Image (tube, rainbow over all chains, first blue to last red):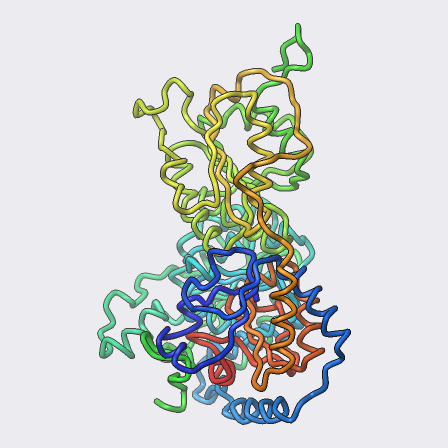
Length: 292
Length: 274
């Protein structure tokens, strides 16, 4: 419903289609239907109005839970028990996943979270549990680096008293860094969460997995002192290097309700995003953290 | 300046401002330049919306984009001609790929200069054609109001998307009466909203009989403000729900029926179930 079977979602299309399943597709755009995957029951329409009609029909039927459904949930629980998002948090370096977990806790899951593009984006999507729509603001389709900070600006204007967090990487944040000036002019109390691993992380991950560790142009050299940079615009800058300081720093930052705070988290360079469906593989052919 | 002999005539620039007022625009994100100086003069004199000065036109479009994502309203950006317009393209393409409703007003060189390699000229309509939902070049001051009305209508109806309105500088100085149409009709544009009832009945029957059902939901649920209906459906049938990257938040992530995001970096359970 309201999704378009994007290539990042279905994995290898032949593999996706090799198991028979009945597909119902609700979309407002007829050109999205059966574009990549042939569907069985297409419904062109506004998803809200279609759902309203469906819910009315179901309410009249009063469905019962079948034995098959019970077995399906048991299978899902078995898959869940793999705890695929667990990570090792014991080596004394800041884990980027841990920063996001703490961000979720400190903001009580209620912030607007914008993100740039890369590993940090995936971790934000995996570890910040969004319960409301229109809170997760990122470039999914084009995957544009440099959106994070201007996206945060747009959100803060939309809701001036809300908590707005921009999760970003050193590559992305430098692409529209000049907007630190705009944030100063309009006193925007955005909090930048920079997951600084001194690499172009997602590129490095692919080079590690598929290019035999040939890290071509993915090392982030000559970075500025982000704290001094933020301060030069009159903002608050913080550099966090130890895991035990993460939670306190986040609390301190978000307690500053009227200040823009740039938080430079120095993270573990070796971390990769898992699970991962490699290019050309099917959805069930994931690499998990425990596999490596 | 209003023509004193015909007091109900105003400049094209003032018409642009009045149109934005009619559309209840609260923020315009922009960056001034030669081609839009008349518009910026009109902005200086108005008090209905706030103009936010960014430091790069790309950021103006991104900020308008996020404003729309957060509120559901049409985001508005204003850039000048030539390099201002081309700087906006990454922002426009970003919004296009995620189906975000935007109206981007770009200045253009005066009508007699178009096509003569004028200073700060670029064919914005040509350059953005593949990455907008629609675009317009306004060549007569009398067309400004209807064009902007159409732009907002196209941006927010059906599958939403960015619309570019390219306005030459001289047009913004010409005079016309301000008449904002109550409705616009475009013969070839009539998006469907209500789904086919027969298909919906069929779908519900299949869902209720399914042994291993799955709700795969994406950005459309967020853009269509359909989260409440989705939760109701999922709860009524006790079906697992997965979100794409764009759909996160469309179903509560902390709910036990949520199996996580699916796809290249999705959870094990979401991908296996799919």
